[in-house]
Length: 367
Ligand code: NAD
Image (cartoon, rainbow, N blue to C red; front, side, top):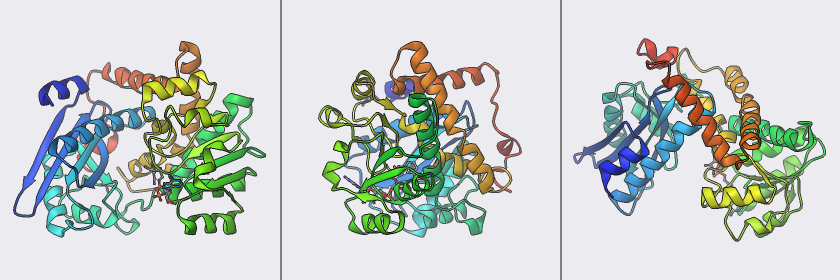
């Protein structure tokens, strides 16, 4: 990889290599943009095959966070961090505290959070070295598990898509197929059932399907059948890269709207294909922003769940705007979502100075 060319092309502001051989720390922090606010994004711990793979991932993911925060209307930029290591074997207090010191050295340009391979306990070790961390437990003024808020945001996105299709946002009587009944999928099924929707679901974990069937009356189908379910809405809530040349032709839904990250294996090809087939796709980073909105609410004055939920309801309007751009410009919704994010960044850039939210102005991310 031509490192400097790549960073210039992708537009990153800073990339910090964090090395502390005494505690076995090898990490990279990438700050993509601080135009809208400090770059917030999770810390991923993963046994990357090479340094280059870790760098590629952190550059791509931090850029994605800039777009996610911008489209959600938050005063946040984009950042992300990776620790090169195995989360099952290599975790230690010293490792996370050392990482926390690197975060502190960036003085608020990067705020960390949980991601794949890290959890609330790791965030609390980081908190002992820096204030620039979110996703800590409610006991520390944090917001705890974001899944229910993420699901609540997905529900708002589904309503926006239903409104776009049928003129009314009600989900009562609609059929929704959920792939993955884990943390987010279960809550989503619960909200949908409460609003009178019919829910069909699958999971590779029998415990998850048994619970959803028993507690929520979800109709269970085998994992391999979920894409073939004839339904109004398909909600991917498992892994990414679900949609590709093979899976898209199987779909029998009018709307795709779910929580999973990076649902399109190839954004350009698969986003266009969904659009051309007349399937309304709610772009993943717009509809699943509830988790980010939730941790954002830890900053500046203490976490307030009501405020987090109120802001999360904004996902409805954000998606309506995406659909409007898509129609006005005759482009696929995945592109319209990029356009929405880019427009907001450009607007704020024109203000001429960094317009960071109140929480950062006095240098204190939390009370
Ligand atoms: P989770 O691990 O709790 O749940 C995922 C579920 O999907 C598990 O029950 C798993 O068994 C199931 N699954 C995996 N492969 C499957 C398959 N092929 N078919 C059917 N089921 C399968 O994860 P989660 O926190 O619920 O997150 C779900 C998705 O939403 C992920 O892509 C995640 O990145 C994304 N997301 C989550 C949040 C959040 O707040 N948790 C926020 C934004 C995005």
